[in-house]
Length: 443
Image 1 (cartoon, rainbow, N blue to C red):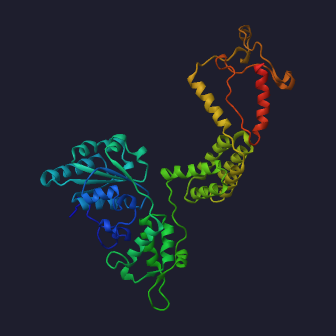
Image 2 (cartoon, rainbow, N blue to C red):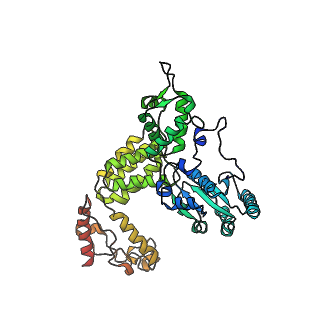
Image 3 (cartoon, helix red, strand yellow):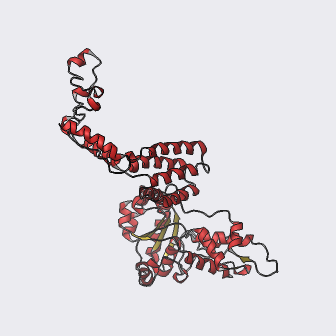
């Protein structure tokens, strides 16, 4: 029997949320993640063999990370110590390690040390695990919703196998909901509530692949169902669910992985001239509570980076949308931002300004910091004029077509070309003008 060194195993007690009561106790009850625990898959083989190794479970909330850790402990006959990175520190780690070491000496049983939200531990706290993992005192199982490449230090990561959990499919969630609705001991079977497939599928859609959200929502909805007019069992339908639930929770973390994934999707949709995709990702961010000014700032950047001089109006509209966003706030600013992303999706694209600056910055950092040529310097004093500041400067307005043969680069970069306009939008006209000026300087 697997035990916990600090926390009791989840059980059916008064007030325990449905999601906790229905937590799978064995691998046979576990739903989803077949790429990890299906027949012949790597983690399933390890569990069946009772082989313990440190691992990191990375995936969205409600996908079974904690349950998988408990199942691993149960299958291997190990102790189980649950630990939260939010509420625990170095002292608590040392206390757990001491108990685990004593247990191993007394009974040779190893301890699975489960750390929820391991990404919240700092480097010192993560380093505290290392010697005890290497000695075999504990087997670390970390759970995180954040990319472990960035949030778990390299020493700990190199000693652990990373397993990626996927959001549960709608069918997976419906299976979990149906089980909860019919289970008379741990679930809601004693309520007599019935549900059609469309009703459960609607709950699953609201949950976005999160079993915990789905079960908690089911429990709330069942407790709010009106009595059936005929005196028979209450029935959960899609129509009733819409009446009881205002809006679904969107999977989004304003400071985490999903934040960067969705802003990347928005940026790349606009770059790909896909207005429909752009509006969708914009709505995903705004409706999930993202700061609209953050979105506006990213779109101002896009206007210069991916449209540039192919359509200079994009930057003007981006600044206008930013001002509208600041002035109106959500939800009124949503149409200003939608207007901007659809315009920019349709606009001609050019990253010539972006690549020009990158090339110039590379030279500025990696080549000799040559002095400004004398002819480009101002000469406000007699001494500066005597030192030839401003000598041979050619005033463009005095030349035909305002073109001179004077170079504006230092000698070590003479003739260097950074900005190469594309053939899209307004840039062909700019290219023609710049080619004339460059040709005159070459002559």
